[in-house]
Length: 407
Ligand code: B12
Ligand code: SF4
Image: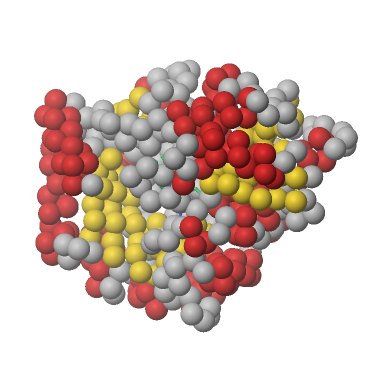
């Protein structure tokens, strides 16, 4: 069949992100004729899509909705406005529309009720589901996991997931640090109170065979990307897999610079090995700064390991990002002050231009434990935040406004 992959617009002030979700899907459709269009680059996404429909004449449009909003407080960007333009363009077209994606999978029913033009809404991972759906459109029996317009396919073992096909979206369109992702595991064993990851990808890690990861990275190098980023929840868990992967990365000649999200429990001596294997930046997400906040947030590991890990990462030459939340259960104004002090200390002592601190605000999503506690049964489709109160709210508004002006 002729399949057009469409990335619903994601870029605004942030750099465009390579649509790896669609590249993974394309990897599973080698017996079909596929091409892709990333509407992020188009001034008028609807017109650009209409032109591509006319040119390529697909039978199926597979559209990816990566983000529904940018989870930013107090000013939130709503990506579904531009997705609406995509849907309007598809209204006039006669083929089958299949939609899916990371943001989409949190709110499939809501998006489907706003845009009934979507024929099949896929919740979760699509590599093995999409070929089966195309078979169904070609006359094979309906998969058991297709319920009306909603498809909830089982989560695949990653050894069965084919290598991504990057040819559908040329690397040269996506310059910049870490604009392409590499995924080495899905799911997460941790229980952070605000997180939807377990609902979407499952509890417990599903690991990708290391030899597949190496082939994928070699392919990324050949395609001409200038760096990559591991998009896994926590790169250093489980430890055995982390060490095996690190060893394999060290053996890839001419590896590109890469980055990853780490836990504060990373064995310190491994940070230098990471640097030697091509790593150039790491991110930590402690989220909170007090023991009470740590416990209430359901974090694994230990807060006291954060500073030594950050210090060691800087010592071996890595650029470090540290992510906090402006408020969380058990933390408000004084904790926020603590986060600003941490920011000043880290930047002054460890390098102003190489240590970055981000203070975001928790966007509550359906399915996250904290949302179930505070807003039981609510959809939370339109953004609702775990907002800082009083002085903390004023401080974070001023801080974010300063950052927006600087950008
Ligand atoms: C890595 C990541 C990032 C990295 C990206 C780095 C990179 N080079 O790729 C960084 C840090 C830059 C980032 C930034 C942002 N991110 Co982010 N990010 C993620 C994360 C953790 C993984 C995404 C990923 O790469 N997955 C791996 C690929 C293979 O999977 P996938 O894209 O989901 O595709 C699969 C399925 O979704 C499905 N699928 C996808 N499309 C389609 C289409 C069809 C037709 C079908 C059938 C199936 C299908 O099949 C694919 C293969 O299995 C997700 C959380 C998550 N667990 O998904 C958040 C997530 C996508 N990000 C999110 C957000 C909010 C953002 C930001 C807006 C944050 C901000 N304030 O700036 C920015 C936006 C950046 C941008 N320009 O789009 C939210 C989106 C939810 C929402 N509110 O809309 C998520 C879901 C996290 C969350 N729960 O809050 N992000
Ligand atoms: S926020 Fe916590 S639970 Fe969610 S993916 Fe990251 S480590 Fe796992």
